[in-house]
Length: 384
Image (cartoon, rainbow, N blue to C red; front, side):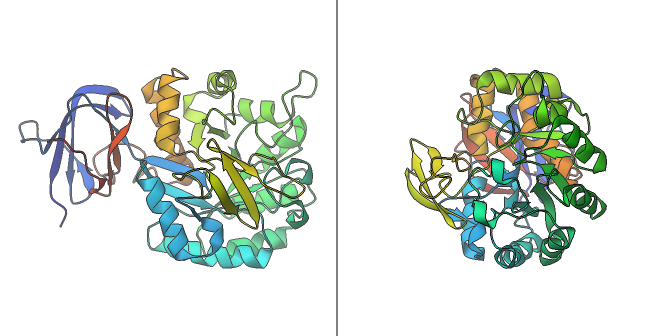
């Protein structure tokens, strides 16, 4: 049995706003209604308590990759990101042979059934060769609905999202197939026009995969997918807030146009997250990390940015201290919005009675000093 825990004295971020000198009470792994005169277990004066982070797009961490097809490697990546406050995550694959992806999906589906993951995100192979980024061009293919269905079946109900380029043959039909299957269709690594992107949203697409990256730039006569995805209220836009993928003014533009309720911060992290510079695998490719920036080491896409080395606590701190966003908006982007997108907001994404006790304790400088998942400390605060 998990012990009853009372956290008191911190600034607590709730859906209704920030509560000064707030209290969070946890019992049997869930947030429960507070008893005002109950003695605190932890005095967190001078700290922040925010909901556990939810990452809907992450490829690995701690030197491990979700594309390795290994439960052991997957758990290394999971534990790495949990230590940085991500208590819920979707494992992202990278473009590969369909049979290889199916084998990876079988491993990740098992971890999903065990409650370690919130599902699988297939990024590729159904993406544009003109916007392939860190994906191997020779492995790309058009989104034939029969191939899409093959991956969904391999995931055994664990597929949560698939990124594709809707302008490719079979793209619109595949978007409809995903939507009808209860899987999020995400527009990304695409060369779609403004009109084609709107058509994809009408067909059921609801996510912009790392908006601005791996898609045509916003032009005044050819607004392309960026304008379409920003303006449509049905779309949640992913943003990689690491200071490399997006200029601060572009981040500000996205928040201003989409609004705080339609932004999801992601890491798009590969295996080097939480590690030092060096060489790392990303699916079948080699990636070199220099000064924290990951780029393809060789081949036709050499030099392309290959995901990130970001963790969501760093994205949080940057959003508040560099981008000067309100903490409440940052919490929405890191927790509430992605939880709602995944359909798990009845359990995670906010600190409300009845929900899982997934939370992060930050000090006054917005650095992580405590992480709790389902009522269990993964990182225990050194305060009483």
